[in-house]
Image (cartoon, rainbow, N blue to C red; front, top):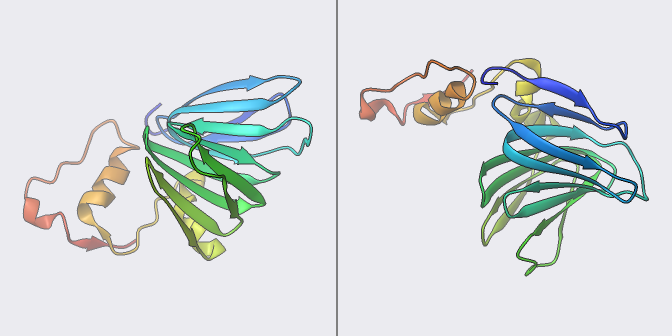
Length: 173
């Protein structure tokens, strides 16, 4: 629900931490493990199992864990963000056009319909992006409109900016 996070242990020993207003569908079989991120954001701590790949589908993107811990945030069907804190993952498109992009610990990726931007980040910066797991939101010179949108993810009573001239004020905290 809005404002809640929840950790869920899967049958294979993996743990999924769901962020606010997030929904997943899980299938664990003898041949594979798949999660569909229907909406929101989830952090995956994947149990190693070489015989059963662990794949997350988020919109048109598929993220396959290669023994790892990572986050996937679905902003829209063709707008997905991936943060890798441990191990490696391979990102592919369901369109099947491009070859997989391998992300290692310390990288984040923003996947749109036709583009994938990968950035190396300090582990401390990645942990700040994932601070929702401990009940915090960390902002660094974030425009007020983006900060309000982030806060509104966690609150059923939304904050509204009535004066449009305030939307670009940078917020840190």
